[in-house]
Length: 366
Image (tube, rainbow, N blue to C red; front, side, top):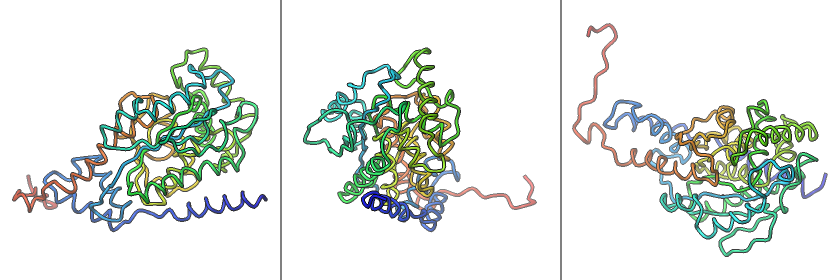
């Protein structure tokens, strides 16, 4: 085995081994505090679930979230040669520059949320230059997975490592809440293939319209995915093999973001279909990582709900969105922060002088 490959695999295994279960004592302390607040128990629903999850992640009942960032991984896909998208591949580098100039939807929503947009070129098929761009290119786009593996295993592992290192660097700078975003024309095709292999989904139910393709192109896209799986024969028992053969560089980068956030004991809010495909790979590599993930919204992409079910996640929002970029995840930042504010700012029954309801004793009459 190549020594660099062995070292890279060892590093990934070390990260996975470093992902610990949530702090159960902190979760219990948060639950007790929530039950003392001036409301019926459990009446704030998912906000209470997130509050307890954050407590377990940070190891304290009333955590400080710190700075917020949405990490947008950008990469191209060779499978675009097959005509599976309504947009040309040239849109990927053009949109990356739009992110860097602050003009995309994710920029607008991030400004509203008080979050920073961190854009990473992990595999764009163009040479890009901007002071705010993190240039971590593994290669100039994946190969056409309809003709062979999208990338080598070494490249996939290197891309995962980029995501891990990006989170580690940001965490060291005081960021404690992350969101996943992506840009890559053709990436719903790769994500659908990942769902079909790792989730055992039929391609017809896994692959949707992506950027808005018509019926004829959708049928062609599904045929391309089937051919890609048949040619590459990815092993569903080996998530890295599946990622290597039918995945994408930006998807691999997001796998690393999720693993890195879990290793750093930080919550990570995932966006839509592509981010959830990355989350599926990440949780197959490290099941404990699922405890650190918050699902932001349910995308219009038809396979998204199946992806979330495979991971065991429930989305907070249903907004009929399908843009990607991290837009849904950034919208959900306000809900995550709301759960913390409830814990810190809402009065307890004792503080407010409000009487708690008395549960009826067993056997007592009405």
